Amino acid sequence: MCGREDRIAELQPEVSQALADYRLPETLGFGVEMAPVMYRSEYYDGEWKSGDLLPFADVSVNPASTALQFGQQCFEGMKAYQVESDHPMLFRPNLNFRRFQKSARRLCMPEVPSALFAEALSSIANAMQPHMPGGPGQSLYLRPTLFGLDPQFAVKSSERFAFLVLASPSDAYYADPIRVMVERDDCRAAVGGTGAEKVGGNYGASLLATERCIQKGFHQSLWLDPKRRCNIEELSAMNFMAVVDGALRTPELSGSILDGVTRDSLLEIARHSGIDAKDTDIPIDEILQAIESGRCSEAFACGTGAIVCPISAIGESNGKEYPLPEVNQMASTLRRALLDIQECRAPDPFDWVIDSQNSQVLAEYLEK
Ligand code: COI
Image (cartoon, rainbow, N blue to C red; front, side):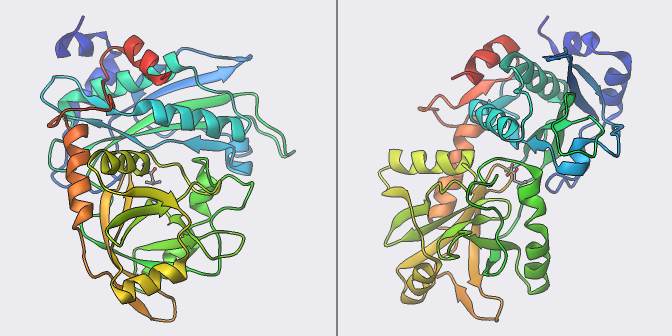
């Protein structure tokens, strides 16, 4: 079977109905519009059980579960793209898969096998194919999620887990350039903690600072290293990049920041186009001075949700601001190059784009 009608015919009637009833809204935003279906599988008795596509709905979670009590949870952010072909394409899903496994291990949860991860991505992306948004920067955002189910108040891992893949037809995270505020008090993640894994606790720990920076007219906090509060780490939901003396710089992977797929892809694309691009220590005070002297011409955020999002100013909580001399010069070039590969308008010299239709082929790609 390979046609769209055949695929829908294979689905449970309530899933087919949910898909048939679904209409894409005119405005999407990021991560607020939920797809009408989700994938679910469970782990118990020491093994993963086969999963299913289900109508999107609340899930029943025991209030004493380790997920709710201790944050035994991790997730991924990835995207499926509407392209000329009649099935959605995925971008570097092997990196998301690898990071999901790493996050699962760190939170003492069982790894999801590549065949199950591939089956989940393939089912939901292809079921949503008729509803894929295709506007500029739009995609089907996918959110694999893993969490502990057992109820217990002792600090101990669950033995039962749920694996879900949720989806959200989405725009880019921000439509316009953002203003970021240096966070000099709190830190997002500790050395030896979970900052390099994609776990909810990292994002939970950023919420208060984000509220504070929004109250001061900014969009995102710019986090510093947890030990000395000296080097830039990342933003609350994205990695950070700057153009200094014409070269692309991003904070090196310190162990407490996320190894972003977009971050890695932009570094590779930049190098491939002959741009001097490297990850290194970026002391905040040096970058602020470099903005004032004009040596730092540009800064931007990058991430799966954000794609590439220009930064118009970096500010301090005391009101001092450092407007960036250029907004969206190198950022727009890199954004276009990235989207052209993701949306299959340009050759893919890195072999980053993979068809979501055949879950066996996808499972092999995940192991790369
Ligand atoms: C992403 O960019 O995919 C993320 O997961 C960051 C944020 C939306 C949580």
